[in-house]
Length: 518
Image 1: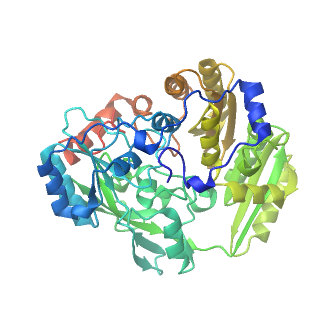
Image 2: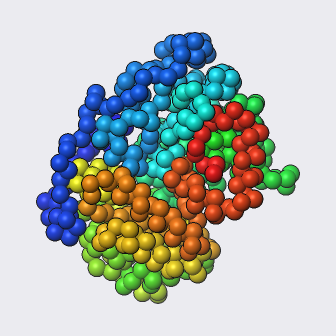
């Protein structure tokens, strides 16, 4: 993972000239006056942890697995939101951990948490480092240091139960490696979010991730049937059956907790047979409203494709649904429908009949194939846009079908009011019988302080989402960026419940402090 960008630096690409012209003429984008910092020039504070604490940590995991060197600290600083990357490109490493610790077992994680609680050292669980909501920036208030708890050594497929169709895996396993291990047995998780290439299973669970094929395979929290969690106060072993009537389901307390209540050290997940066929195709609708109605019909009455997404007019025109061909978009609104399984012809024909009956025009497999090939490349495009002098960021929400138009308008108006004349694009990519998500991408020219520029816009959007009755996040999580809006969403009593859970599981307040809990 690039330390100040996304993914493999070898995959970075220059913007096509037509895109540069569009940015300049439409948005007034100009290249930054100051070049991006090098890793060596990133400014870090001295390590705050005393030698005795570092020695205690090394006594648990071994000296080789406690790192305080410049590169390790830089690579574990923040996540991958646009403000995170802008700060890193400016050489600002002020949120760097004092040390990076790499445990190799549940027992080592538990022991590390006890030491850190005794020594008042914050612990930030670190998987792929792909958070886009400030989920990897710990508050140091009242604490004596910060460690990044990198879980990459917890990377095994522990066991496979093909009778129950579950697999027990460790949280540091990156998604492609999990798919490779399961694929050797003809199985899949079916979880392919945009962060797929670098994110980990533990991160998926901790942030309630939702993949691009959620219509067919479910969200990641739908896949979790059991988990093990280390806390400073002991271990939680949760999940004895697929469903239970034995009181509130404490698995749901951990899912989405973003490391604030404990560290996930094992996951038992539902698996599926790997599909023999994958077919993706495109459809055109005249408007976002018409396309939304078609998606709702499929979600409520079926048959539901495995992948189902709708780009609005602007996203379709720009071509963002096909990142490998940006700038070469079309009119109307593009729908991508994907079908996966042992045999897809029947379901594909039935879904096509619904889409055609509701006004869809078939475009054949080419748009679907283009989307499939570029499905993980949009973050690389963001890096290129940042380097060109544009501020580009994403945000998402979800709501009931009846409220979706109001929510869509509220977010767009908030962005226009905060940023002047930005380019605002949107798509629906996760559908349910009762509602859907809205995923926005916004592009504007950077001003003199692009971090503050986006902070103003984000504050306005958060308020608009709350006012319009949407959830503050469908799948990115809460982190630091959404804490106040999350507090408004769950209400004062809900906040007190969260604080009570935090106090019981983490009385010293060392687990990802400043994240999730208002």
